[in-house]
Length: 124
Image 1 (tube, one colour):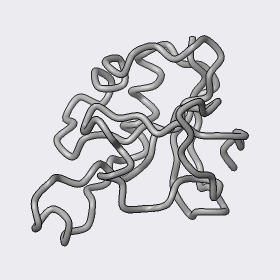
Image 2 (image 1 turned 120 degrees about the vertical axis):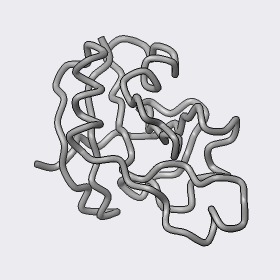
Image 3 (image 1 turned 60 degrees about the horizontal axis):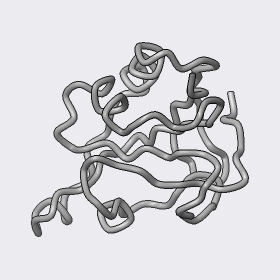
Image 4 (image 1 turned 180 degrees about the vertical axis):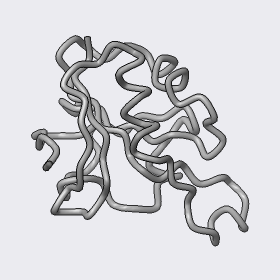
């Protein structure tokens, strides 16, 4: 299943005040980060053991907002963190976290433009 394609993305994260600095990969759909992006693109922490709580702590996006959860977690600040591949959060865990927070239309699939395996849902 292909993920729904938003017109713009806002990269959000609890891992760092500026998630763009810790996200080494590309964003879905070939889009760039915009502070006023229509859809939220969530970058999880490498130490996120409770994905549902992390999604809840991000704050509530406006109702009806498309929220995409990236597969790779944010890289740590150290040199070794930057050299090692970013840890991957399983798709089932990301989708379950969205369902647990009341998101609707939850799904998972690969974005053909970036090759990223995304989880997504619509904010309640």
